[in-house]
Length: 413
Image (cartoon, rainbow, N blue to C red; front, top):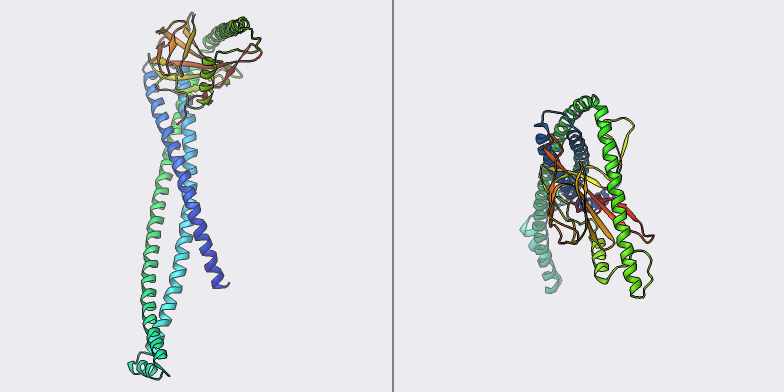
């Protein structure tokens, strides 16, 4: 293959490799941030599990926390694998860069060697003087002298280029070694995470096995929870429908016949502000992990049983304080026997719901600011952690309301 073509190919690869390395660096930074968040999540879940396990009995909370930790660790392992793949790509690029630099260095050395040979053949000062004095005129002699000087400078520059190219190669080799060491560290971390994951899965199997003997009790708990959920759901729908009715009546008195949910300019501004903060709403607790997602979830132990979740369940430390995710007005405080107190907050056409309080600090009509404390979370009998149940509703043009997935609204790191 033509040597010139090889050099051009290496040059293109070198330039393209530089672009890829920049992209890789950005991707690596993103993966490292994701990895850090997952590690913090696992660490926090570990703390919750330590508290849960102090009760010396298996529970659904313990199983939910274990499931969350296993899920987070699996994603962590996938993230580490992605980082390893990125480093492997970086290694290939660095090897290509070194090859390109070494090829260029070989050419520079060959050119320099040829110059040295020519200089050796014409090393006689007498020959140089004869060459100068044989000029036809002064101008020609000056040009010949200038040639000698330029040739000497060129040789010096060529020697400097060789040194610089060698320094570049040494740097690239050091960088390559650093990437390889980093890769080795990630491979060890991945193996360690896989070993821990296997241990956690084994622990989960023990908890599941322990809970299998409590199926009757678990089914009774699930039936009660579903009934309580239906009560809360019906109550929320009535409250929102009533607010829509009142808003329509107020609009009618002003001679306006509006459909949907008529709002004052202030309420409309609040609603628009709530919409603009999608993905940035503060969590309804200062710390915690989501252990049950929005929508249908498979029951942790009961086969072929799904549990519909109208919001998200956040596991947090025992007796933690619940807080408002956005400024608004308390629409109602509902008491559900056995499930504690529920607080509904209005944000224009949006409503947020906070459940499982043993004590609340607010009443209907209270104006709340973002992150304002709402109440103290309860903990189930014998449990050493608490759960925050959080929902988001939106009033519709039809006069009804729909439930939204809170996970897409609250802040993500």
